[in-house]
Image (cartoon, rainbow, N blue to C red; front, side, top):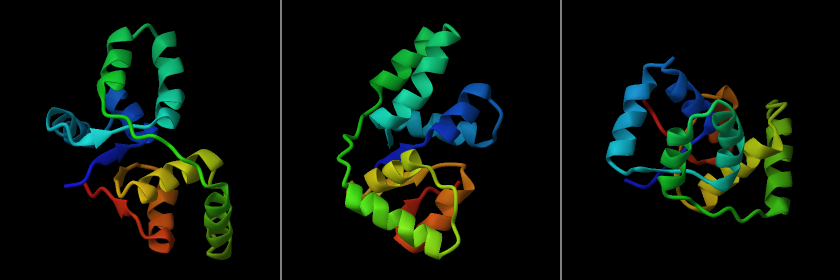
Length: 129
């Protein structure tokens, strides 16, 4: 199984214990099957540090990190295809995450609906839970 990039939407639910997928994420952590990137860490860590949860910061930093190499032309093309297919309001950060998944042959674990919609256009793997 290839590595699973866990989006911030999943981590937030995991930290809040608000979703049945929390057990799945715990299993992925135990199996060392997941990874993060610096963009996802940048979305999560300020709020975690602000709430004083230093153990969570250590957990996130201990996970395998996938480097981000941005091809801005591809990001632009992804967004053009999204717009042509009626998928609006996808932020640049989510396009970068999707690009990171495609370029590194990862599987994405995310709760945001637009990732499911974009999967059909851009042909990447989405984790089924």
